[in-house]
Length: 194
Image (tube, rainbow, N blue to C red):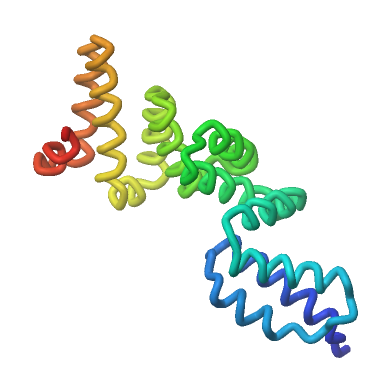
């Protein structure tokens, strides 16, 4: 049985949302949106306009879009993870943590989410959580640790400096040793210390 044009457009909209969430590739989404044929269904037109606004507009539009998507069980995790990342970029680690925590309730073992959490915990100076997530990454995704060792080493170096500033030499040494273990390039540590 042949599908109607409206059914094809609905499928196209769902594919656009998925593509935007999973890859962030706005160009593919934009090209797909231009191929919509149905203009009679107001719901489809609303979604088409929302997608267009997200693809060409501001981060605020993307936040609104992700909040709408977070209402759908199948998209909730991706929406929360993306919201966490946006708020982290906006230097709002508390809001980022709120969304990352919601995403963790759905899938706490997602590697991208764990990397976002490492950044959040570094911003919040929650060094115990930083160590916990790093240990978890080492167990589940050693390749992610290897790929991001400079960044994670930097997080540990910041923790070491923080503990040194607090006068806790034992913890400072622990975090410095972990930083060096992750990236034993002394050139990097020299740059990080500046």
